[in-house]
Image (cartoon, rainbow, N blue to C red):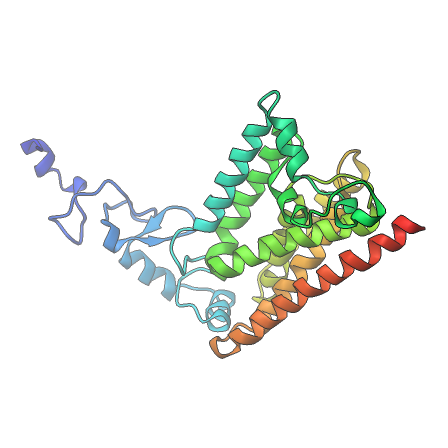
Length: 296
């Protein structure tokens, strides 16, 4: 039951629907708007009038992005399929597993079951069982709280932009296949080294954002600098798999290139085929190259 003072305060109700109570404000004009009037923006939500004004004031680069990707939103990162649910789900699952790893007596057991090393693909060459799923499960385990926190922060920042832009299915495919690419590169260049962490998938997201941003005509210098610094840090710092970073980045770039060339609805089947081809090639490489190194 509301008080008369509450009911008389129009700031507690949607400005377009005075009978609908809401506590959400448009991030541009700060007026109260109900769920029906909310359009998700890169940060917060905006009302229909501000969205109309934003569309009218779009830059030429943003207009080209809308034409190329078939979108009608005011910004490149405007949400097309609702909130970035896949990003939030990946964050929740990975964080939950990472926190379990911090429990004494439990963490080591989880890591042992999920980390990846090339010998798990070749039981005939080692004492390890055949467990190929570790190529992907390694993405969900980390080497400590800082490792987990940095990767999850990067996932949250990149996912807020890429998932709305690509859609949930494409974003999930990009993340997982990039993670697979990181594991494959690590298996080829460091087959006897154990691998944990989502860094390969994260580098795939960064590389994809670089390729897509360049395709849309955006200024990608900042992304390129961040990608270069992170890769250089992994290359020179000890205990970090620069091989996984490299594999994830290359895979993410290939996926982004395929997506930008098959963006029209009638090309969707080609999009699926290209993603399948990339996955098959990675699978073939990981079962051909590491044995040659292990037997050398």
